[in-house]
Length: 609
Ligand SMILES: Cc1ncc(COP(=O)(O)O)c(C=O)c1O
Image 1 (cartoon, rainbow, N blue to C red):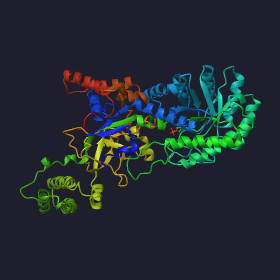
Image 2: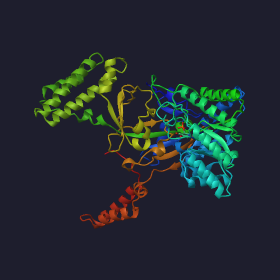
Image 3: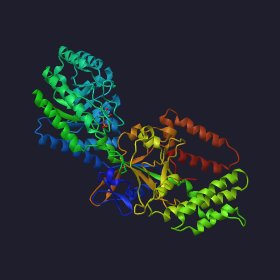
Image 4: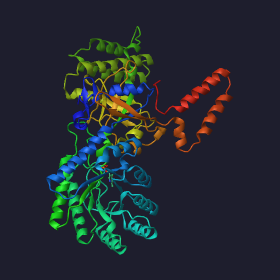
């Protein structure tokens, strides 16, 4: 996997050019150069880069592909879409989504009060707002206010109680009633990690009996004219198209039945989200089994077929796929702070006049290592180190001997991996697995890749440069939290190999790709690490521009955000220092200003010590 599977996950958004990975635009800027430019601003922690052109690309692709399928199938409904805010509510993402989606009337979906208020403030008036999730009277009143303010808003009810509240609010106020949608509970279930959203025991949606009761209640309250949509969502990141087709058949028939029962205003079927994103980077890994073309033509064809069979006019098709729209737009870049074995440098070898025989033997092995003998010598070295460690435990060799033995063995390993890089053998592969290097990254997996921490969701990862050299070290990645969960272990099924770099001489950065969906607000502040610095990269024909710098919270802001009074904290620290003895007034005032600087910095590491 020399190219880190870039042709599997990058959809041509990024390419390898020479030594570095570049944005696949006209000017092909390298991510390494962009990172170095940002680090000149004294940025040392992880960074998030946003690429609005990739949001635009996905929106265009979604509309073009569905509209093509509509034309091909002579379908008579239209295609509309909304972006589910839960996928990424960050301001520069919502700004890009609404800007790039404007010409398509791309709307927003909200699943909570805060998201609804965000949607009301950001959705252009030519677009739709849909509201899902559980709602109370206040949230429903907010939807009435949105309708009154001129938004084209549809409130999807998750249960009959919500419908009764809508009816009550409509009776009590003169505000405009929003459109009403019904989330239907399908017996068809989804597939993949996030497939718990449908099925008879799902958390959401109305059963057949409840749908009929809803229809009766709507008729009785004279609100049938507002009932415009049915909705379902069978799960995110659907890896198989078969369950989607089953769900469409079921929902399509519910739609047609409702039309025949007199739901005259009903004109939309909302198929929720589910479009999958390529997160894998290994050739034999399981990928989703459909393309957007197959997905859209299946939706359009099946709905057309059901409606034709039942003599019902074709509904407009809504989608709420958000992962598909924004996953690719964000990239997490983390500096590597340390390779755990980099301390075993040859210069630190301090051999005695008289060394234990096994240390002398290791020295000879190291000197004589060549392509022919290296596998045999590597075996010997691994055997010797076992014996030497036992001798140390029994008190027969001292700490200097042990240090010399460890340095020699690590250097034998490194040299052997280099000498054998051209050989493909299972044994060598196994040795690479056993002799992994640990790469310490200046980032928190809890904060920046929470789906890896919680669900073992893999994200494509690669170094930003050195790409013309073969990476030889089996790598596990450790973050800077004090937690053993903060690790992406080496997985022999999906191995990651990185370069052996000397971090004293050069910097090494890892990029985690396709992290634009869900990770940012799901990310948690474990150990009080917060959202990294972020930057938007705008491309032009000849170059790029870095805009919208948003800095990570300072350590004092972090404490403030969880309820501490920052003034009290700062005053306590300063008064303790002022009261301290044994330093001169000048040293005191210098230390106080140093403290001020430290409190204004973010929590990520600036250097390794
Ligand atoms: C109702 C609803 N619509 C849309 C989505 C977004 O789906 P996706 O993650 O496929 O973008 C979700 C996510 O779970 C959802 O629950």
